[in-house]
Amino acid sequence: MTTSAVDAPRRVPVRPDDAFAALVDDPFQSGALTGEAVNRSALTVAEVDLATLRVVAVSDAAAALVGLEREQLVGRLVSDFVEGEPTGGVPLLATGRLDGFEAPRQIRRGDGTVVEAYVWAHVLGLARPARYAAAFVVDTVPTQPPLWLSSPSSDQKVIGTVDDEWRIDRISHEVQTVLGYRPEDLAGKQPLSSVNPHDLPQVLTGLAHVHATGRNAVVRLRVRRADGRWLWCRAHLSAMGEAPRFAFTLRPLSQEKIPDAERLSALEGRLAKIAQEVRSVAFPVPSTEAPVLADMPELSNLTSREWQTLSLFADGGRVAGIADHLGLSQSTVRNHLSAIFKKVDVGSQAELLARLRSSR
Image (tube, rainbow, N blue to C red; front, side):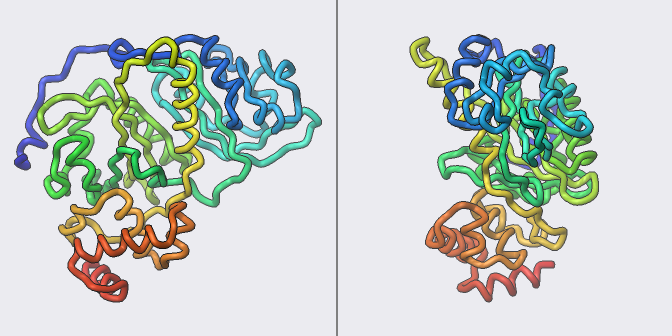
């Protein structure tokens, strides 16, 4: 691929914003089936009707959190159980401008007591605007929002960051598999030029939300591949200090057909996958002094895991602490560091630190 391929104009498909819903089988379109999946879930999760903002289904764990029976929760307004001012995220979900957002919230229990919690709200289904959303509750509030999310090694994703001129300064090697671009060819490019124009309003809304709140948001968008085709993806957006810098995690959306007999289990699996991202270990925001591709072009060979490991290491982390942050074993972290050593041509942690410092 040549650099010009990144910037070359492409014909924009004339398709409505909810076109992805017509391309794949969507079990979330069945409200009854979705409610059953939520009711059966072992997660702390509730389903909300975005048109009425009422609870339509709730898991046993969520009912226990507020100290009420499921029957006492269904049909109630979400505002009956949330203290404080609205975050502004729910209207963006209801109008299809965001796919998800996070916020620390105070949950009002049935006995009147209040508990601190962290809530991830995410729409369900593929049509936009969506009818339903799931609210996942984590009973511990992180000290900072997650940035690059720790996830299973099988999770296909691209992570990257954008500088104050909205140009890519870090991006993981998986972009070559997912989108067909070499990372070094994307360094210094503006990522929004590869977003389908129909999806730019959602992306800009998401970025405005994360910079206004300091919390992550999720949008669905089409990204142009190197071969000119559009790929539907889900993007987690995170603020990096002051606007306009931001970080992103990009995941392709599945277009698998689901047999009727497997629809309920597929719904439960999708809920679990969303929750896994919610429960991922918080990853520190790379400092402005952290290495970028312009300073160390060899970093274009790093995978997302290696970028995560390197960023923690560059901020003073050591093997035990990095392992705790990423939910990995110490031997796995050492393996990642060994791979980084080879890719940047150093032989030890001390040499790697010296190499990072000399690049600044």
